[in-house]
Amino acid sequence: MKPPANPIPRLKRLFRELYERAYSSVRGFGRQTDEVLSGEPIDFSSPSIPYYESLAARMSFARVVLYMVLLVFVVVTVVSNHRLITYENLYYLAKDIGASTLTAHSEADHISYPISSAEGDFALFRGGIAIAGSEVVTVMSGSGRQTLSDNVAYADPCIVAGDRFCITFGRGESSFAVYNAFVRVHAETTEFPIYDAAAGGNGSFAVVTRSRDYTSEVLLYDGNMERLADYHLNGYVTGLAMNAEGDRLGVVSAEAQNGIWVTKITVIRIGNRITESSAVISGSLGSTCGFVTDDRFAVLLSDRLMVFDGDATVTGETIFSGSVPALAAIGWGTIAVLASATEELTASVLTVYDRNAREEYRLELSGEHPILKAGDASSLCFGGNALFIRAGDTLFRITGNGRTVKSLTVTRDTLDILPLNADEVMVFTPAYAYRAEEEDFS
Image (cartoon, rainbow, N blue to C red):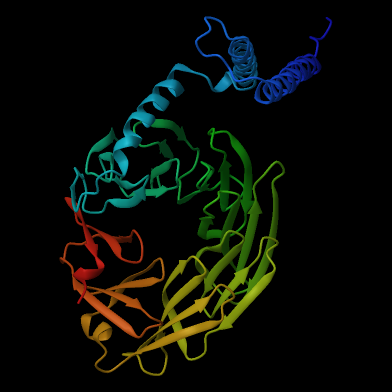
């Protein structure tokens, strides 16, 4: 069977001819304009003016050329992406365009939502919030309008969100679902339980499960829900993160060898060609991780903080001396670690590092320090250049390299706190979320 002819050369010839005709018309128009401007004044009382008749003809020709170019563009686009043009995609696109006009016009200070479990999980998603409960997944716009509600059955609900999609699953269960702001766009059942997931801004995401022969398996997907690669690891995955662009995936895994922990850090570069690099750290257990820049991956271990580049090469490292890390937060260009002093169990140290794991400032939380008096710290997170730490029933906002510490009392049933920026945080309770702003802290 004779293969179909390649249409690209014909399209190139067509564009070249159109360009030459348009170019010659423009040159002719310029010459005629010069002649008119240098000649006698135009008699506007005349029923027919040759200059404007010629101009109208050329404008009509230009319009036809633009219509032809548009037609060629539409045909090429449809042919190149025919598999993506489905009724469902067009339906979702129409809903997305209609609802996006409402997203940022108004921001509610109080958002009520149906939640089926006090152990629900929360995420900031497309200008609003997304909630995974044990019985329902809900997405609310920033104005408080419910845009999605989907029935699920999760014993331990989890959610992660990127710019395009959010992924929900039940930890230890064998299925996950992918949502945009209005509908579930993909669902999949895995052979083995799911333990973690990560999402990027371009729609790429990764899911952690296991296989028959390996302790851990990382499934990597693109924005079209097509599986790009499977990565098999002998150790347990203790940390997973994807950068904001969705072109880097960092994986932390650990296994016991001869009585000591061995941690493997893997950095996967996602593009036309998927490549990976890894580093092995003996005698230390890795946990919290995240991208401190688009191509720098930070990992908290039991005795140190390390930063790796896209080739898994160490670009910064700090060894903890006299303290044991308890909490960590990784923001854009900065890292915070809350550690307990080994010599004085009632004292803690909050240290902030730059993207190369160099210390920027530290706070000694001992004696009468308000954070220590408020209770045990349970969460630590960045919002822009502000650091938020929850201790007991108090939320603290730290700015100015630790010189300014303000506090806000939160309810005892608060489930999560997610910063919107340096001046605003969303505080989640079992039935509603509310916005706390900088002026609310005292």
